[in-house]
Image 1 (cartoon, rainbow, N blue to C red):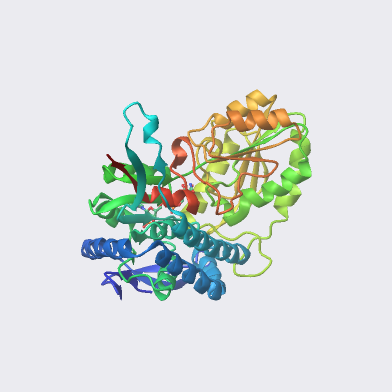
Image 2 (cartoon, protein in one colour):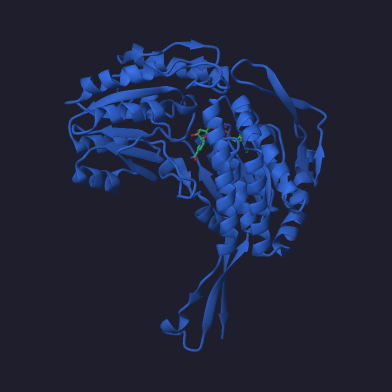
Length: 469
Ligand code: NDP
């Protein structure tokens, strides 16, 4: 595919191959953007911001609503594109496409709801005779830098609210998975978006990222990806608004009264979907010592039953990792844990990009499979004695994106909700659950700012105060 900059679809002198992570075949190529291409995109985005600011909220609603209708017509193609370039199984690819459409629908609605508030200034000691209100105005140019693992829906979570708020947006999709974002760009143009309201520039983040994120014409950066890249972008950005959706090593607490069959089913679903490459994948499972052995007995058959293979084939439950080097890394961390005393319950093997669904028991929280972000198809089990120890273990992490507890005890559940340092907290399901309308974002090194169109649309605006004297 071509990239879309300066109001046109353009080729590049150099190309990047987009590979199918399952078999390494070349799906397509995209241009490798140059510094001149970034300049073209930014200059165009600055003009696009002026065009977007002239649209009424209703016009922005109409464009996004039309885009949602077009996505509905193209869902099968979008779902297959996601699976082919990213490697998640086709049911998950279709699921992501459907969620992305919902995200755009929610964004369309928010375009109409964006408002300021009147301020009761005469309640201030010096406020007699004053009338004040706030106005929400677009930031201008928004740069949206996105990861490989949800190549459509996470782009929609940025582009939808940015356009709803009246900004222009420059999308920089992950180099491994740019096709879904390019198809979304076509959808938006077909829906009537001003031609310079969006740019979709392809190329290595390490090469073009600093130019894009450091440019003063960009007023807002919304990033989803790894902590290290997020931190780097914050330094390069300087004085700009930023939203950072970063990594995690999400913990699940299994109390002694938990329904172990349910925990095992939830773990198979939330630890291994997309081969564990989800920011809220269940990674650390903290199990009360009274039920530790029984839980392993319940979990092993469910993990062994996960059929792996070509993700485009119906019935396959887990596909490849995005790159072979990531599967190699996961395998190294698993075997490093075993060498240090962890027990391999199942899995532990790798062939190319395919890593077997893996369960490790007796994991020391200091092992990398527990304390770092694994981002792969393995879960690490650690024993605890009581709720206080479980909460301390859950909080023993620089991250804080999602956490869960399984219990029937309302006091334990409430203590978990109050004391665990995490942006998302789930009771009686795994850590990987999201409805696109909800506020979503992490604490600590997992980031700052919230997504979910109702919340993201505010982050895509500046608040102005007006006082009539
Ligand atoms: P990366 O951080 O490697 O890349 C994310 C994006 O940043 C890519 O588009 C990448 O481009 C770009 N990038 C890389 N270097 C720079 C730079 N110097 N300046 C600007 N942009 C740059 O993440 P992954 O794609 O590997 O995604 C996995 C990570 O994303 C995990 O840590 C995961 O937890 C996190 N994530 C967080 C979510 C959340 O909601 N909190 C949701 C999903 C994922 P290129 O591809 O060209 O390198």
